[in-house]
Amino acid sequence: MPKKMHLVAYLKAGPSASYPSTWRHPAATLDDLFTAERWEGIARTLEAARFDAFFFADGLGIPDLYKGTYDDYLGRGGQLSLLDPMAIVPLMARVTKHLGLGITLSTTFMPAYMIARYLGSIDLLSNGRAAWNVVTTARDFEAQNCGHDGLPPKDLRYDMADEVLEACDALWNGWDADALLLDKASGRFADPAKVRYAHYSGQHVSVRGPLSIPRTPQVRPAIMQAGSSPRGRAFAARWGEMLFATPATKADALSYRSDIRARMEAIGRDPDDCKVLPSITVVVGETEAIAREKAAYLESLVDPELVIAASSWSVVADLSRIDTPDALDSPGSNQGVQGHRDRMMQVAREKGISFAEAVRRPRALLAGTPGMIADMMEDWFTSGAADGFILPPTIFPTTFEEFGRMVVPELQRRGLFRTDYAGRTLRENLRNPG
Image (cartoon, rainbow, N blue to C red; front, side, top):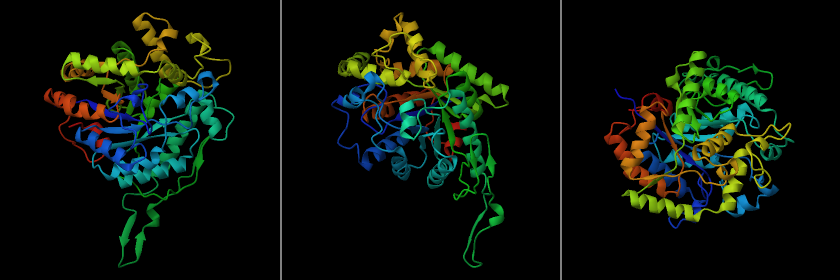
C-alpha cells in the first residue's frame, strides 16, 4: 500500500494566524470571533476535507517585545489568543467524529495533574481524538504572567517537560480499562483494585494521584512538538508523534526530518511513529494568474510594522534595536525559539539577503493552481522531506474551504491522501492514513 500524507490545520483563537494582516481581507470573518458557530464551522470544514487534526497555537499573554510595548502587536492585529482554546475545543469535538483535537499546554507552568485531567476529559468525550502540543514556554513575559520573574534555563525546561510527561503517563495509566463496573444490581460502580496511585517523584515534578479521570481510548493523547534546538530535538525524538516544523527550503526540511529519524532510531523508537510536518502557507487559484493576483492582494494588505513586531515575537528580541542574528542572545538570556530563528536565517541564506531584511518579510506564500500546490507537496513528501504538512490559514475560513474543495481532491486523485478515515482514534489515523 503506498504511503499517504497527513494534514494538520494551524489555528489561533484570534483574528489571524501566521501571515500578518489577513484579518483585513474582505473575505475574513470577524463578527463571529466570539461565537461557537465560528469554531464549529471550521471543525466541520476540516473533517469534510479529511484532515488528521487541528491544533491551537497558544501563548500566555500579549507580546510586548517590539519597542517594549504591545501597541503594534495588539493594535495592528497580530497572532492573538482572544479566547482560551480549552473552552473552544469541546465545541469542535461536539460537531465532529474523526478530526483530531489539538491544544497547546505549557509543561513549565501547568501542573501535570491539571494537564492530565483536562486532556483525559477531552479524550474521553471525543472517543480518542485528543492531541497535546507540548511547549516549554520561551518568553519571559509569559513566565511573569504565571508569577515568575523569568524562565528557567532552556535545558532545564526540557528536563522538567520530560518529567511532566512521565508524571502524566503515570496518571493516565493509573486506571485499568475495566475499572468501571457500572453494575446497578450489585451496587458496584468501580473496582478500586484496578485504580492506582501514581506516586511519581522526579527532580522537578511530583504527583500523588490517582487521577480522577478513567482510562481513555488513547490512554495518552497524541503528542505534538516543535523542538528545533539539540535538546528540543532530543525531547521530540523521545515523545513526539507529530512535529511542527518551519523550514524555509526543501533541503532544510530533509535535514531536519533525517536528524529526527536518526535520533529516534538511536533510542529504539520506530521513526515511522513520528510524522514530521513542515508548515506551508498556500493561496489557491483556479489558474496560476488568479493565484498570483490573490497572493499579491494579500501582500498589499501587510502592515510592515506588524511584520517586525511579529518577527520580534518569533525570535524573542526587540528588532527595533538589533539587526543581526549575533545580537539575538543577550548574556544570561533563557528566552528563544530555535525553530523561528533558524527559519529567519534560512530565508536570508536562500534569498541572498541580510538577516535584517529577512525579519522584515512575511512568510513566503505558495501560490498556484491545485495541481501546482499538489506538485510541491508531492515532491516534498515522496523525497522524504515531509510526512505531511501543517497548514495555517491566510484568510479565515476561506483558505481551508478552498484547500478542501480544490487541493484535497487532487491529492486524493494522485493516491497521496485518504478518501476516508481508517481509524477510530487520532493515533490510529496517524498510524494508518487510509
